[in-house]
Image 1 (cartoon, rainbow, N blue to C red):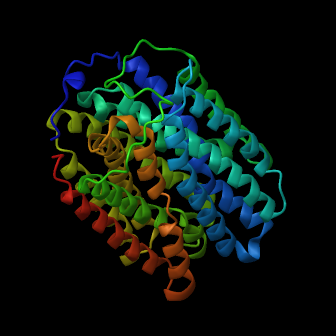
Image 2: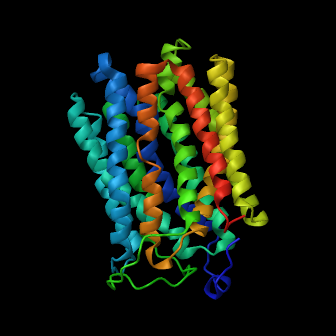
Length: 405
């Protein structure tokens, strides 16, 4: 485990339940914007306006959005580190990002041309990149090391809650395509505003270099930082390669009569398991100080879910897979951010260095692999087998990290 600095040992910032709830609500808004499109809303929209080429168009949009994030997150992080602002540099960038993301997001559902959708989604992705770069740096800025598991859970668990709440809203409350996109945009903005506009008394866990002081900080050279990056990239890629096309899997392979309803059932199962292990994983990580083992187990559980669908593509297998995937991903979300924060090499460049890792996980590896497998190699069973292998490689990579247990 990294040795704590004097500043870290003495940090007494008020990172209590109220702060964590507000921080989690801001992430809930971010995850609404990010997760609903690839999981349901974009496949549904493209299936309506470009039905004959839905796999190709969806793959293009996913790759495009990933590339925008890859470029913009590190850039936003670097600029955020250097921004002087009375309100707080993280708040300024998060507020601007939410504004830039949610306005075009609300307009996507009104479009009938997929190239126009693609253009709007570029702007959405740019705004989301600013939010990701700024909010993720808050843990390093404000949270003492012995509370980072809890803060990581507050960042990760809302991902699952947002997915389920959003799915319920767009499948049962507002079912029209234009209305669903507008509703999610409004809810995302409203969820983030309390945390971003209300000042708290929490003090930084570390004193950072003054923003805008012109200091040039070299990019990290320690191997642990890059092994943490690789582990996150692989586990996320394997997960996305399978889940992004789940609606089409339910429709084209399992031939479910109500694929939207079936997807909602799987998502609800996923939520319960993910929320449970997300909460427990964060607490266990802080108490035991063993982040690597928890991440390895989390990746293996997700790999088992994908392997199950590859071996037995049935509805009961899909439900069992949702249990495994939810349990694994919940534990991963609650521990991975804490581990990444622990291996940050320089306090002066937190947002930039976190931005590089967050951007790397959005490299369109998952969508490129999925498109290649579905188009040239085989069907969804092969795709899920490949996803399992990728996630196992991510689990193994975490043990190359030496400075964190």
